[in-house]
Image 1: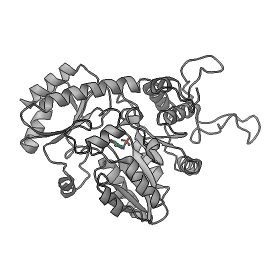
Image 2 (image 1 turned 180 degrees about the horizontal axis):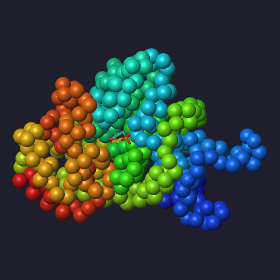
Image 3 (image 1 turned 120 degrees about the vertical axis):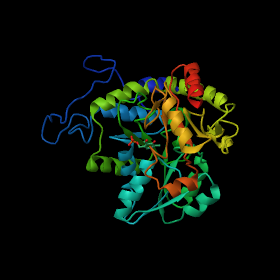
Image 4 (image 1 turned 30 degrees about the vertical axis):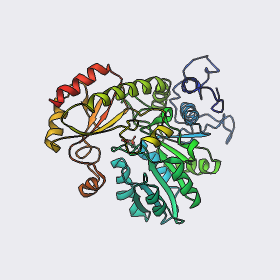
Amino acid sequence: MSSSEHAGFGTRAVHAGQAPDPCTGAIMTPVYMTSTFAQPSPGEFIGEYDYSRAANPTRTALEANLASLENGRHGLCFASGCAALAAVLHLCKQGGRVVLSDDVYGGTFRLFDKVYRHFGLQFEQADLTDPAAAERAITPDTDLVWLETPTNPLLKIADIQAISAVAKSNNALLAVDNTFATPYLQNPLDLGADIVSHSSTKYLGGHSDLIGGALVVNDDEVLQRLKFIQLSVGATPGPMDCFLLLRSTKTLHLRLDRHCDNAEKIVGFLENRSGIRSVVYPHHAAHPHHDIAQRQMRRGGGIITMTLDGGIDSARRFLERLRVFTIAESLGGVESLVDHPAIMTHASVPPEQRAAIGIEDGLVRLSVGVEEAGDLIADLDHALG
Ligand code: PLP
């Protein structure tokens, strides 16, 4: 099934980019565990295949599958979400300027701040959920806008369509990190983004068993530039990881509906529970950007952020008392995980900056899995004491 066919999401999740193997009829795309490909005559390739850093058939199937899920024309896969982000940064001109959300994944901030700044790229962080702040930050000398929505970990929601209009009027590319929402809940290309980025380590992989990244674009020229960077820098995923991802995306819609069902029930429990100062969830009526979240996200997702009364001590006690939720970095797997951003995922963001944007010491991020909602709620209730 070609990625251009517009079947429903679930049908594309199962079939896009894949067809039974022409030699054997194998239903699953084989794992092409090969570094190189025989050439019938020097310089003559079978299909596009000469060397697996450039292209590998298992990766080709995955790239087509992800492009289809994001309603895009072209997919490109990388060895990690950070490698995908780094490839996008290579699109900037020397000394170029990037505007990024003020609340981004800590590793994203680190890559900008500690690696690419040394090469002369300039970065400005802005609250891109505030249209006036976005207008001020995005100027004609901006090469790229890097937008996370929902943000990690505060779940702030930016209006992709509005930011896209500002980026376009300044001739800047807009890249949206769609890791938290996934293509099942949100399609940034349809809202004007030029590039969609994923840490496929998270919901796309869904089983906490691989590290991966992906980009999806529509524009042929942007594709060619990114493909060249992918080939030249070489952070490509191996065929086994591509196979595992293809296996996972087939159930993305099923998993996401369960993640969302469970998260909604947990939000209902938490908002009435003592010991909690605030609960943040994109589709919750109390969310400050609830209207935008309703408009651009089909459901609220599987991540809940909450702030406990009592700061770091009560947060640590809560995490240690959990039995079904596991204390771990990462998110988006079938198992429920809990993260303390200030100590764990966002430790690389300076404390004063964390405080300024609201990552408090009592803040906890829940990645709600697909277990029984009742068991998850009982676990939270017990841990809250
Ligand atoms: N983007 C977001 C929103 C993330 O949460 C992460 C990792 O946690 C990344 C990007 C980086 O992805 P990876 O860990 O696959 O390199």
